[in-house]
Length: 472
Image (cartoon, rainbow, N blue to C red; front, side, top):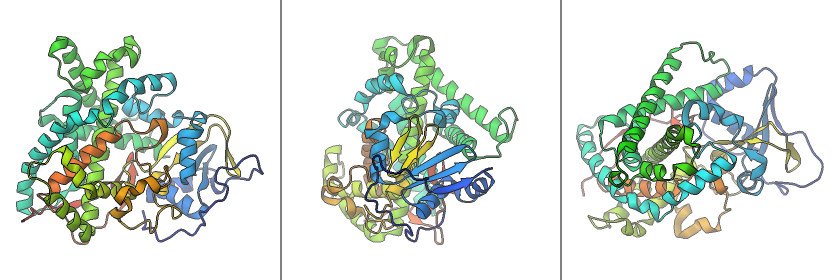
């Protein structure tokens, strides 16, 4: 995707949501047969297509491909409308069917209606800011292990791909959090299988010329093998856990969900209900944090003044710092939030319109798919000064309290905000502080990432960096 140079459209709107006034045709692009959109998507990715619509047509725009209508929304007031004020007019409907079918099933991220409400009520107490502190020992344990793993890399000087490096660490943490699984041998297998599932699902969503499902393409065979590997592992752990006496079960998320499984779904699908929740939590829990940290390292390498400030802050902490000491490392959290602003791992999320909804002078009809775009909202010139610049000080001194409450939504927003938000922030901060005390990853000369979204945001071709051990 090309570098953003400015906003040719005047994004300021006096009547963002509108009322009962004149209804106008929605601005955007009409593509009767979809060929031009397919070529554009192949070249620039879905994220590039969406950004182009915003740059050319403003905060409300529409991409019509045949009968299918995608309505792209970028203004924070739109985010509030879709995720909170008028959320009953939207659902996670047909647009999420591929994710349900190929990936998450009916987990808390994809379920709807009464099923979602029940699941959310059961799971939310396990992810409150207070509750996630019980996982802090796992964070420290695994980042210490990872530090010893990185030391040979720092001595050798050969570049590593930072995205899978961080995923190895966060996947290990999630396996322990979910299943108390400490075996390092399963991390690479599960991580690779999950990434294959994500890539295949993303391709089914965006490739107009994809082969039918029954065609045994290499991609389909790879997906089937990956799905089998993930399901066999998770269902095997569930079966083993059920055989254990209740008093001997480890106090992890799986045990907590088994204790509440009657409220999560029907009894005749109990194992698959647990499987869907575990897949949802594992994928959402490790992949997004891993990419956030990878993006943090890249941004710090490109902004040495910020890196110096971060290192000074973390070096001032006690050698055996605890979670309570993080209050003395506020800049580290500012860095994480600024990375999430510039490069949110989930740069777009979708909602299906179920009844007519007015947006300013436009109306989105049932059957339309609304694309809510954190990637665009986080660059909106009405809410961010010099939005393309990496500036962690945007978040200093509780500045977030004076911002539009929906101008920053990397974890979605409203009642369906990501359930693991507090977990992700605490984990990311502990991992960043610990590793920044020991290492200073450096950008490979001449490398510039090409950002693409395949399920989640990432640099096409990887993110090579050299791991340099710090000398204090």
